[in-house]
Length: 275
Image 1 (cartoon, rainbow, N blue to C red):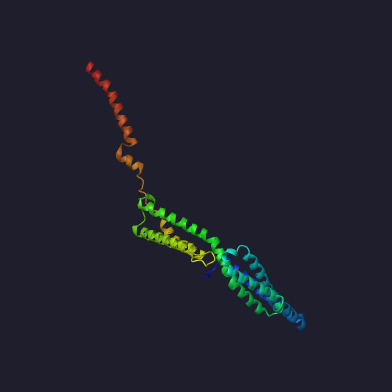
Image 2 (spheres, rainbow, N blue to C red):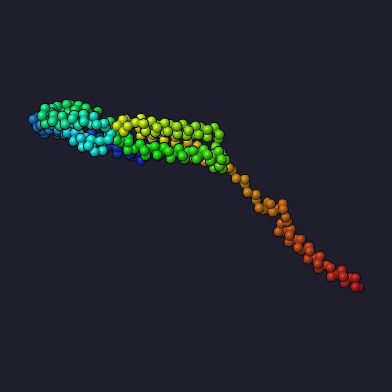
């Protein structure tokens, strides 16, 4: 028996057909390129592609020079010391002059190496700016998580009925994780506050996000664990209880009939006494 349904086989057939079709057209394209373009024209197409890649590499260097220089006078200004800023600005000017002089016609690899050299100096500044902007929000989110789980621990200690089903061992693990995370956050915030804004951060946003995830992994499953379900006792049959607790309808009717019979015989007995 096949382990795939009919729809699965249809899907697999469709994917295979599409893949074969794409491969077929790519093969035709290569054949068309070889057969219908003369060698000189094929060489021209390849050369045009190489020229485009070369121009793109050169333009990337030029764009990075202009972009970084503008930001050094703007949003990046306070994230680099004056001395380093002057040195980097001079390097950008030298690179710009080189592009229009000796760097006017260089191999692609030369432009790529020049761009990498500039990014080694510019990327740390960009990282400090991004970290400084995002770090407060990350610490705020971690603080909210800590408050949430601290309240959870307090509710458990106060015998809140919502958490009576949780064990003391797992709550001890939760409390330990909360305390350690709180200590970690305070130590990192204190260390970061002692650094200048031009220095690389002691803690990154990625580290804070990882700590939040670690805290959630330990505490959230325990806090949201539902209470165990309690089976309800079966309901007592009303008819059975009626049979044991009182007379049935038939017995009641018979009782009433006997009572009427007794009432009808009483006058006869009185007449007999008169005679």
